[in-house]
Amino acid sequence: MKKRNDNSCAKLLLKKSSGHLKISLIMFLVSITITGVIGLLYARQYFQYERDFLENVAMRTITVDMHFGNRAVRPVRSIDVYEISQALINEFPNREITIIPVYTTNTGLTMNGAQINFFAVEQSHSFIADIDNMLDHWAYSIRQQPNPLALEISVLTEITDGGYVSGALERVLLNSATGVSSNTPVLNTPNIFPSMLEYPTIFVNMNTFREIVAVLLNTETDNLDDVMDNNALVRLSSIFVFVDDLRLVNSVSTFLVEQDYRTFAPVDSFDDFGETLSVAFWVFLLSSIVLLGMTTVNIFLSFRSFYRVQQKDMGVLSYMGFNNKRIFRMYNKNLGKKFLQIFALSSIFILLAGMIIFAFGHWLTLAIFISSLFAFLCILYVAIVRFIIRNYVKQDLLVLIRESKEFE
Image 1: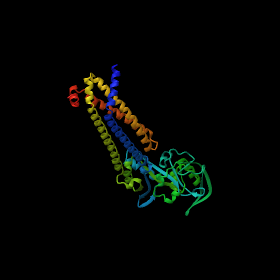
Image 2: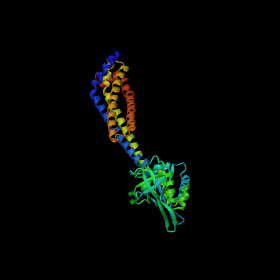
Image 3: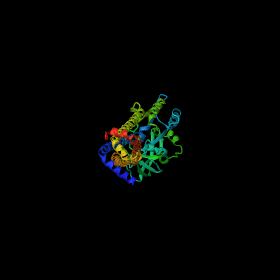
Image 4: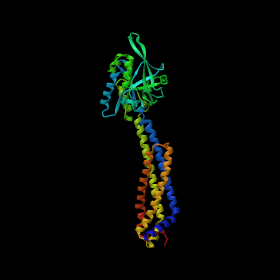
């Protein structure tokens, strides 16, 4: 019977205080919803930053195409792959730096009689072209090509003082697939002229490249470095240095210049790109913390004001014979119901806003936001119960009566 009376009394208190409570709860709901939406906008900004910089291979790739040494200028050669690798290991120990040689041919390859851009890269370095997996006897391109792709090879028959003499035209059939990114650093280097971008671009792995070079040169290609040193038809397009830490790109590029190499990096136009990104991140983080802190304080003070008004009702209940435990339970139960309603409504608003902001993607992020909202409300609920409701309920009955001015 006592429990039933407490439930009925709790409902009456909720109904009686609905005007005050409604204002506080509406402010509460609007505050956390706005904070949540702003948080989603920050998250979208971060995903854009991640896509443009952290996951953008081109932004962390340095192109090395020429060597200046002994008063001579020459294109990079196979020996430079080793020398650059050793120099970077010594200068930047324990850093994630990957040396990626990309191979090509000077002439002799066409497709349907038309010129093509032809490149080869090791399977482990296929990410330089945004390809996950490069299989033997497959050709990967930006745009859709015929399948199978017929690669026409002018077989070398003679080397003369004036150049090379080609003979029979061999055809090699390769499976065709798309997937190469048009933003790959391989196609954005000083030795790629704008007119070349109009030609079809083909990437193959090194096993396929060796087979094609063997047909082109009509010889065995067990050691590709020896082939390149003795035949100008096969060469390095460029050496690409991939730096895992974006903040090191400028330092690595500067170091390679000091080693007499010509380098090109997309972030060269920034004075200190790593510092710029770091400052932007801290601005976003501190803004979020300040916004959340202001919202929390505002909500806490709003409820403190509301329950201060409720002191006279607490005093009346105590005067009528309700002990502190029963009064506390009634107000605690009413607050819990309202917090559940707020969580349900704000979750719906944030979910809908997130679906629009993320274009129906990043579902895990939305789930984390809603879970964080639940945790935040739980913490705030406990704080209000412990430091506001419990504090007012424990106050002396005469003080409550005097402050409420109900029984002067």
